[in-house]
Image (cartoon, rainbow, N blue to C red; front, side):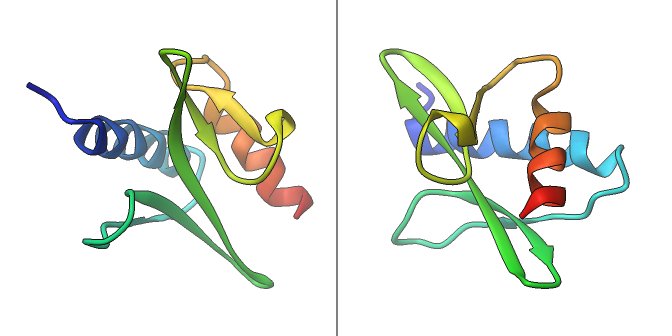
Length: 88
C-alpha cells in the first residue's frame, strides 16, 4: 500500500523531471520530520513546492491560496510553476 508521503515524493520526482526538461534545476528535500518538498533555488532565496491533497485531489502548492497551486497531472503544471518562479 502506498503511503501519502510516498505518493507526494513520486509526484515531486515527476515534477522535478519535467522542470529539468525545461532547463530548471531543483532539489528534492526529504527531511524525516516533515513532508517531502521540491526546492527551486533562486537568487532571492528558494521556492518550496509541496504536494497536498484536497478532497481526494492532489495539487502542487508553493504558497498560500489557490493561485499558487496547480493540480497534479495538469499538462502545463511545470510551465505554470516555472512562470511563478520567474515572477517571484
